[in-house]
Image (cartoon, rainbow, N blue to C red; front, top):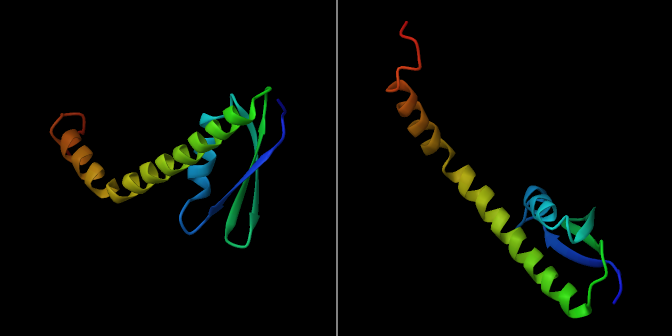
Length: 102
């Protein structure tokens, strides 16, 4: 068991730094995370904060990659549906009586 760092590399054409940072936050109990940007790649250096077996580390690294994808898709869906959400909210508030008539 060791606390050796692992490096995951993400292409910024496919993943945003926001998605990677959100995933890092979700794994803050397992890893201290550092970032580096080289060319169009985002390097994510994960250092375990506690002793972890090689198998356990591999498992959590795979879970981290899945979380990055999940966060990326959440951001994408949020951006793609923003106009519709704002329209729905506008209609909901206009019918609620919360907005004062002019």
